[in-house]
Length: 183
View: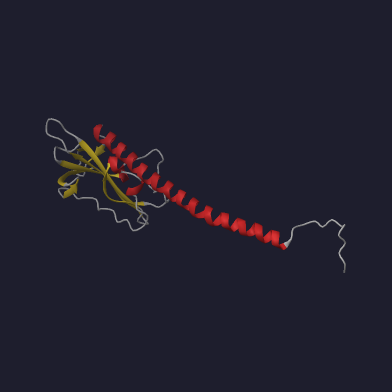
C-alpha cells in the first residue's frame, strides 16, 4: 500500500511517545527522593517542636503547681542542684493526642527540670527525651535550646529510660539527684 503524502496523519509516532515517557521517568526519578526527604524533615521538625511544646507545658505546670508528685503532694520546681521529672503522659496538649509525627504512640517521653543555679539565684534548665513505638525520636536527654532536626533519630532511637525517684541523672556534664516525679 502506498501512502498518500497529502493525507493528514493524526497522532504521535512511537519515537515521540518513548521520548515523552523517558523525560517523565527522569523527572520522577529526581522528584520522588526530594519529596520523600522533604516529608521526612517535616516529621522530624514536628517531633522536636512537640518536645519544646512539652517543655513549655511542663514549665507552666511546675510554676503553677498543677502536677501532683508520686508521694501525693504537689510537684514543684526542684531544689538547687536537683531534678524533677515530668512524664509527658500527664501533660495535655491542645491537639489532645499522645502520638508522634509518624503517627505512632509515644512509649517513653518526659521532661526533666534541673536547677543549675544557686540557692539564692535558681536557674531552671529543661531537658527532653522521647521516642515512639517505632523507636523514632530524641534518644538522649537534650537541652531545650539544643532541640532541633539533628537531635531526632529515625528508627533505632532507644530513649533514655525515665529516671527513678532518688536516682542520679547525668545532664549537662554533671549528675543531678531526682527528687520528684510528677504523676
